[in-house]
Amino acid sequence: MSKPLPDNQPPAASASSLKVLASTLFAALLAGACAPDAFRPDPPYEAYLNQVQNQCAYKRVGRMEINSDFLQDSYFLDITSRFFNLESSQAEYLASLEGAYGATPDSPGVRCMLRLLPPRALPPPAVPPPPAMDGRR
Image (tube, rainbow, N blue to C red):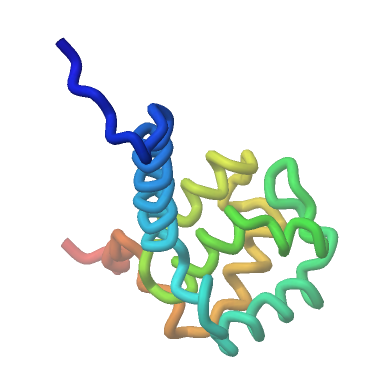
């Protein structure tokens, strides 16, 4: 036999409070997964985005074009901020651009954005170049 509900709580109240709790936890998880500059200003990153807007305008990033709409795309801002702040590798960043926008590493927009990165934000290649061949054995 089921336990009766208290007189002051309607049957939907317990289900409603579970929904509120679940949505609160979900929001907290999403907030924790955001880029570093999502809730606080990041002047170096914002300066970088301004350079991208000024110097890479109308270049292609896969099926997208760098313009004011693209530079406000939340996914683009998130992955770019993570990469800019050294929280993801260049390979991860390029894979994210490819997956979301169909961009290849040699696309004009991607090359332009990478060229504008400050030296601290561009990690060394994952694989060092092979040693120079000087003809001696």
